[in-house]
Length: 340
Image (cartoon, rainbow, N blue to C red; front, side, top):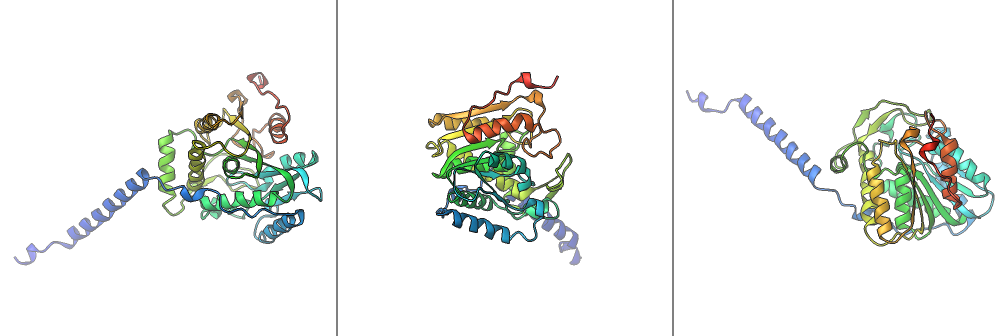
């Protein structure tokens, strides 16, 4: 009879499991509700290259650490052998690598500018998206800052150009760096596309606090990029830095005076509403922002830059991007350009 009064082991285990599950649920709810701080995602003290030789040496030092990177994905510097009036810094997209920007870089170089395309951390390795699973918002921030610091030694006026992740880094650089003269921001990854803003924010809040999870994905990929898939941690960290960009836009006008933005109306990978929000905030602060919409009827993919991307139309897109980067009249792109 005395034995019947003791809690059974099965009941103890059930209580224990229930307590653990409940604690996990509460923790996840707190993660979802409480946003991580972005206070430490501003600019750090800059260390700009003072001379052309210093800049080249820094690029060589970066390349020396890329032994395990696929050759096609290594950092690139296109130089005329001395400082140029304008220097272009190109930021590639998430899961891609500097090869994405090769064709654009060569066209800008042919126009007389030095062009720098550094590899983002965790990218260009043999393998899949899991190779980038450790990359944080501060890593992305430091990558952008390092690129801009090198650019100071390569030319007088620095222009940053980027797509997706790179577009967000171009926007971040425009807000944070006095040395950036012009920013060309292409489909910046500020929030997830095709979902409400609150759900994108919840994704960011939760997955910046959890270990990386590699999720399989479908669709096309380019030969030099990672196979389709999503690494949750670097993706969430990317959007955390994008949140800093959006928050910063509500403050003083960015120091970069020339701001050019492209929205691909057919794009569902990133939030076009968030891009419109960014543009509106900058305009309220007094900055003139040139905004170009690529009509949805063009059916362009998210990646509008990579010549190897299925469905791209660089014959239409490149003249727009190059004109923005070089500060020349921008060709109009209207629905009349759609293929019938």
